[in-house]
Image (cartoon, rainbow, N blue to C red; front, side, top):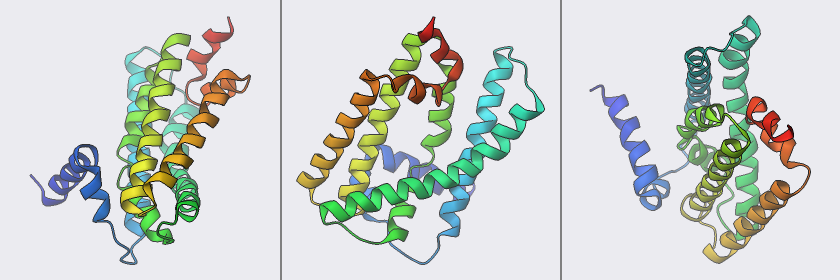
Length: 198
């Protein structure tokens, strides 16, 4: 197996099985290009998987759909990397952690392998019940990753991080029980969410 592929698979395994040791190894080395490239590639993989899943499901694929999934989604993945980096920096500032933008971006990029999985899971939703379950599980996982990154990568105080993540969890739950839930679910899978309105 190619060295880089083996290293990538080991990183994925370590991020899931042993996040504490994995995230503690992340350091600033002045190379953000690799992190941006990883986000773009994972976005591209995610978009391609969604297209494939729709083809298998018998959906009509248009030029607009192909452009959206293979161009827009990878670019959005890079944008999302920086948006989440800003959120992570904010959490770090509040919790007394590292104030290093590069470490935040590199830490997030190291878990971007889940981006294609999340896109695929969202596209698998086929009715109101399934989009709710998938969306809740995905949001819970993202909060868990934010916790791991904030404590182990950004070195924030554990209690303070738990407090901030708890506040974010309450905010997300508020969205789910308010009228904004439809807009939130629509962003993930419009087709499945429309069944909630019928």
